[in-house]
Image 1: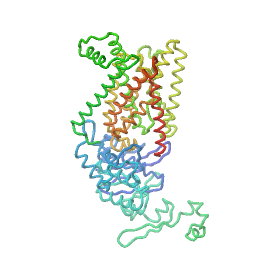
Image 2: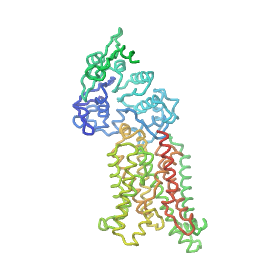
Image 3: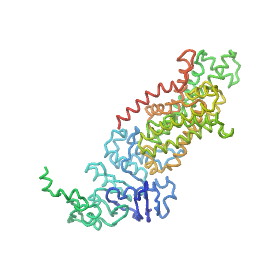
Image 4: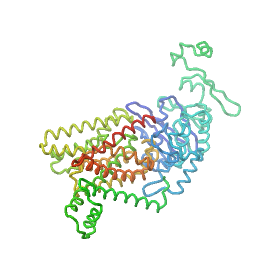
Length: 275
Length: 342
């Protein structure tokens, strides 16, 4: 099964957000989407999940336009973890994960033992098995995020769509979560903020700017100093390491796009003087 | 809680719930200005339903059967329907303060009912409940439109509801003042405050089916309501056809509210407070929360009705006054807890 978007455009509140974006998700890959704030990453994910319908163009699931599927069928194949989904309900950790079984249940298809096993497994996979009875509002941001992932896993999807899954997590949880997702053997599409994480975990990276995909390829080919300067307006140094890995060192913003920055000469010495 | 309890246990709790409801009805039929012994109530019911032939004072029998029992049954239906509407609105809108009264749905229903009763809208083709239903839908539509314009925050829809209630209450008063005779006006003003005095068995034939069907429709969508815990987008990604579920459940709540308003007038705070009480007992799963809310709502309303008849000797207080006396402090409590949690 594969998901693809062909020439999709989308606008919200009279503002065009995506302009003719095409992308095909290869089954089994970890596809990262990077780009500045407001470049359309979240919108693209919500179109790929079928929650929103493009104004122009079409999203296909296994070759069929996604809106021709019933929502329940889509939810059995694609799980979407939004950014910062919160609740004020007095719900327990386990109940939040149990929601993942929704696409398989109905008034005439009640909860059974298999559902329990799937939920148990999902909670173990994100190392939250011991937290089952804890109330949602007593959990930390990292714990909540891991439960969101567990809920997505309880959907038993083929594809996992993640919108900035590591937001508000400390570095240990960020790496842990991405590692976990990487190990799951699912097709993953994730909007990511941290370019080094994208380099570490993604098979391919799509770079978005102003509602368009401006580059698509392996981390090696895409994450060049030139592209990062152009898209993010930051001067970087890409350091290639011996065993195929590489890291990005951020140096300073481009002077021309940040007039205020150009006035105070941004260099290490400038900071120390100010202090 | 998702794991179903063993069958005997479930059957037991359903029987206990029915017993509680029957006891409340029984008590409702026995109490009032002249207390009638519980035994007489039981014998009356036996005479009327089982065809037994106990010798009873015909006046007592008449009071129990024609006035009090029908009134208690309608009170129960009304409490259950309003509580279920409250659960549905709170879950769908993800707002602990949502309730048919606060969102202006009851006010819209009143306007619709008055429009039919006094202005003769629909030229006799529309009945009072249908007018109330139309009014409630119009009110909810207007309030949600206003809330959307005002931004989607949880406060917006409550404020929009306040505006909507004021508007529709004003329209109702306007219609009543302009077109009703003095006698009509007095009757309607009493009815608007929530009043079970005029209730007879004919009203049960509307209230009971609406409450039962409404509860059934909502229970059918219990899992969908659960899935709204993290918002509409999250529900959609869990496979819920969000728009259809919204439409069906809002219509169900509006129908329940409208039917009850057309019989007993608009009664506040039941839909707000009862769901919170039920959540404290049984948690957030709607498959349990909905029936338990209905039960507590039914019992609460019967109790409120009893209280309204005995609290001032020789006087009947509008039941809306009793529910507001309990509901308004509870509203304040929920409001302050919400602030503390945020």
